[in-house]
Length: 263
Length: 301
Ligand code: SF4
Ligand code: SF4
Ligand SMILES: [Fe+2]
Picture 1 (spheres, protein in one colour):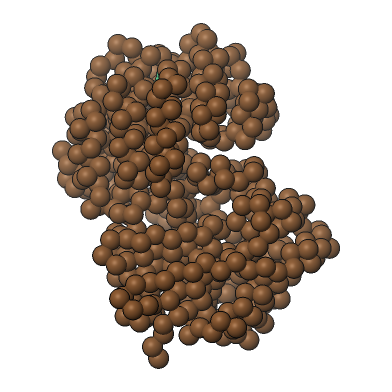
Picture 2: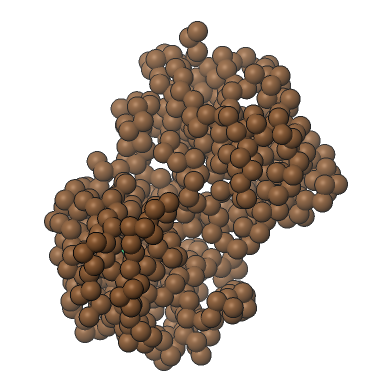
C-alpha cells in the first residue's frame, strides 16, 4: 500500500477523552494509518480506558518509556527528572497508573516495538518516542541543533524522524530534504495557557516535500478534571488540565520553553 | 599530587557520541579565589589561557559534521575573556549554549547583546551561576568576603534581562541538611526577585584547592572494571563529552590539568577511549551527570 498521509499522536497520559476526540477527527479527515508514538499512561485517570480506542481504530503503537515501565512493572516511569519535586509528582501518577492497568494491557505495552519504520510516498519515516537512539531522550526545540538532527537522520537512515516525549510539539526542516517532527501530546496542554492538546498529520506532497500539520484537539477537559478529582489525583495536575499551564515537570524545561509558561 | 597515582588496570570508557562540547574559555583565570575550586583558579593563575573568538569559531565548524548537541563554556570566569559575548553570540548560530559564571562581573551592555542574540536564535542560552549555601555565612568563607551579595546581584541582573539562571551550588553541607538548605535558598532567591528559581546541587570534587580544604582521594577510591559491570556509563561526562582548552582537546572539564587527559589536537583525535585512572572518576561514578543541564538529563534505560 502506498501511504501519502498518516496521523501521529503521542503522550496520551491516560487522557482517553482527548484520544477519542482526536481519533474521531482523524477518521473524518481520512488517513492511511494512525500511529501512537508512546506513553499511553501517566498523569490522567482510568488508564484502562485508553486501550479499547487504540484497538478499535487500529492504532499502531511505539513503546514509550512509560509503556516500558508499566509493561515490565518497573518501579518508576524513567522520565529522567532530576528535581525532587518533579520526581515526587511523577511517582504519584506512576504508582496510580501501574495499580490501575490490567494485566492484558500491561502485556500489550510490554510487547510494543521501540520504533516503527514506514514509507510515506518515497520518504523513509522513522517513528520513535524520545529520539531514535534513546527512548527517554528529550529533544527540545531550543536545545537541539539542526546538525545534530541531520546526524541522527543519517545514522538511522531516515528522511523523516517523528518523536514525542517532551510534551511540546515542534518541527524543523533539515538539510537535503530531511525533517524532524515532534508530534506533540494528547495527554495535557502544552504549557501555553490553553486547554486544547495536539496531534500531527504528516503528508507527502509532490516535489518530495513533507507537509506537517499540527491539529488542535478540543475535548471535555472539565470532565477529565472531574474524574481526576474523583480518583484523588493531585490538584497540581488538575490545574494544568484546567488552565493549560504546567505546574510540575518544570525543571526539565530549557529556559526558552520555560519562559513561555507561567510557572 | 592528585594525578600521580594512576593504576595500570584502570578500565576504559569509550566516547559513544560527542554530545557535549565544552570550552575552557576563561582558562584558569578568575577574579575570585574560592578555596573549594577544583582547578585552583585565581587572578594570578595563567596555567590555561583564554580561548579567542577565532579558536572557538574553528571548533564550532569542526563540531558540525560530528553532530554535537550542546556547547558549554567554563573557566575560570568566562566573562573575564574579552571575547566572551561575541563567542556566545556566534555559538547561538550553531546550537544551545550554556555558560558557567560566578555572576560577579556581568555588565549590562553584554546582557543586552546576549538577550537579543538569544531572541534571534532558535537556541537557548543558559547561565549557570555558582553560589554556595543560602547566605553570606555559608558562601563567603568558601568564595571570599562579599561574594554572596555580588553573585546575588548578578542573578538579579540576569533576571531583569529576562534570563532564568540555573543556580548551582556545590554540596558543602551535610546531606541530612539538604531539604532545609534548599528551601531556605529558594526563599532567599525569591526574596531577591527571582520568582521561579532553578537550582542544581553538585557534589564537591576533592581536587585543586578543595583537596587542601578537605582531603584528596585515597588510592582505594578508584574505579575498577568490576565496578563498571552493569553500570550505565552514560552517567559519566567522558562518555559523551570532550573539552577544548588553549592546549588542545581533553577528556573532561574535571581532569583538565591531568597530563593523560589531554587526548589530541582535534576533536576526532580526542574521540578515543579514556582510562578512568583518577580519584575524581570515583565521584563521577557515584553521583553521575554532574555537569549537564536538567533539560538534557537522561535516565538510564
Ligand atoms: S570556583 Fe569558580 S568562581 Fe571560584 S575560583 Fe574557581 S572558577 Fe573562580
Ligand atoms: S573525572 Fe569523570 S568525566 Fe572525567 S574521566 Fe573521570 S569519570 Fe570521566
Ligand atoms: Fe516519554
